[in-house]
Figure 1 (cartoon, helix red, strand yellow):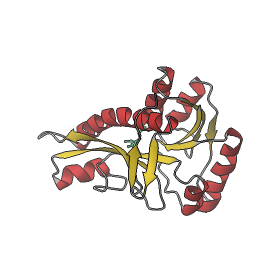
Figure 2: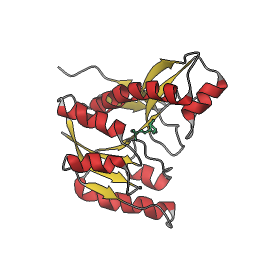
Figure 3: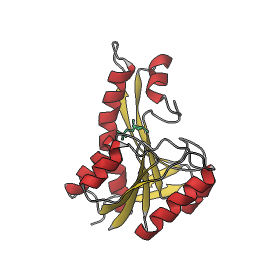
Length: 203
Ligand code: GRF
């Protein structure tokens, strides 16, 4: 069974989707800790409700590297196999990425490499694309850039607002993210350069 640590900054609906999939027995892993850079993140509350260690680490008035080192040290006792970024709103430096190379996953609310950054749904709507979606990818040194694990498409409707579009993308995030975590926990993801090969289920 894999040990999963989840980094969050906000409401934690993706964290919830992963916890629910674990409860349904779909993922061969357990969440060992949830770390937030915001004290009032509702995601921390969701963790506490399940008796999962909920750790607040402030990023303010610190060098990025020092903040990251604090996270690394806080996670050490839990020996995480996988780090899941579920709405974690801090950019990670090579310091953190190299500590868990190939073992950090992020979800992004657009079809990468289109619309990286923090306003992906708004950017897609304003660009006028007819299809957008979400991407689960491994994290490398460049933001919203690493090898892609799963993407799910969402059609843009004529009367969409940023809110309605974001809500439909979120529904797909809640399917894609647990699926990617499940595959990782079954050792079925192989990174080959930019590509992630998904191995068939083991007998
Ligand atoms: C999601 O839209 C995710 O794609 C983005 O931040 C949002 C987090 O939502 N990176 P939640 O905290 O999981 O509800």
